Structure formats: structure tokens, C-alpha cells
Length: 204
Image 1 (cartoon, helix red, strand yellow):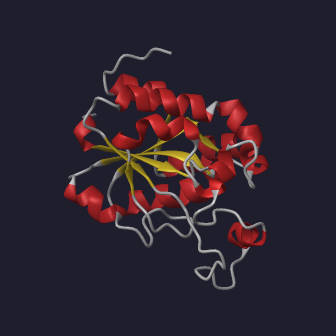
Image 2: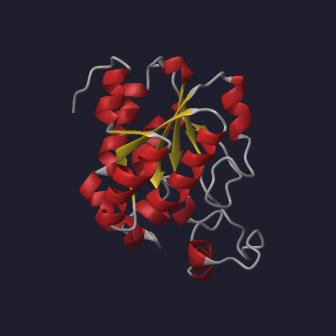
């Protein structure tokens, strides 16, 4: 595995999910604490900082009246009802833990749903960089992580999902997807195992 061929895609690292006062914090709170998703992601970014790996974030934003969502159902309906991820609000901003890495992270805007490839130029960016390996981290495991992972697989990328850098709605859901769903199309490993594959020193 060569770092210049890898793209780490960060999904949902925004205050409304991961800040204690975030609107949807309770959705992933239990799973996040079990997987230590934030501290593990920070460690991963520290180790990848000086490599040639591409690091991308695909935040989700909506206008104040949610005009982008036409008759939404499921979690998108909930997002609209509770006014989450509104553009320009504190809840939509990147979590403070990732701020030190901002110069190293390429923000790809446009995400309005589950799949980070839809309504963004993520696909074009990966092609331009001749990326062959896609590594996915973030939230929510059963929704955006799964949807983006499947799409990357169908586009021909080798997909890796980090079991300790992703958060689900419940601990059971996290374990179920990592054990039964993701292995159908992706490699499921921890961030330390990824660093080992890249022959990077693993220290905490």
C-alpha cells in the first residue's frame, strides 16, 4: 500500500454530530465513545500529515430553509426538522479537534445526502490524483459511510473502512456493519493496522 495512491475521506466530522452540544450528538454518542473515533482519527491524521496521502473532508451543509431537500424521508427529514447542519451555524462547522490539520485537509463541498460522491467533484479529484485506494472514516456507519463505501467500490476503488474511526447509531449497529456488511465490498481494519500497512510508526 503506497500513501500517494490513498485518499482518506472524512465524513461528518461536524459539531452537530460530534460536539456535546451538537443537535445530533446523541445519535452517535454511545458508539463514538466505544470506538474512540475522535482520538483515533486525530492520531491517524498526525501520522499521515507528512505523507503524500490525499486527505479529504466532505461536510454536509443546507441553506436555512432546506430548499435542497424535497420531501425528505428518514434521517434527512430529521435533519430538516431539528435544523441540523445549517450553513453558517456552529453546528455545521468542523469539530475543533480537526482544526490543527486544516491546511492538510482538502474540503470538498456539495454533499447534500448520504453518498459523498453525489453532487460533489470528489470523483474527479480522485481521478486527477490517480488514487486507487479509498479509506473512509466518520459518521454515520450505516448511512453515509456505507453509501460512500459502496459507491467507491462500484467505481473500481479498493475500499478500506476504519472500524475504530467510524461511528454508528448504536454499538450493535457498528459491530454488525463492520462484521457483516462492510466485508462484502471492503477491507475492515483499525487505523493502527492501516498505519502498519503504510509502514508508518504507530505511537499514541
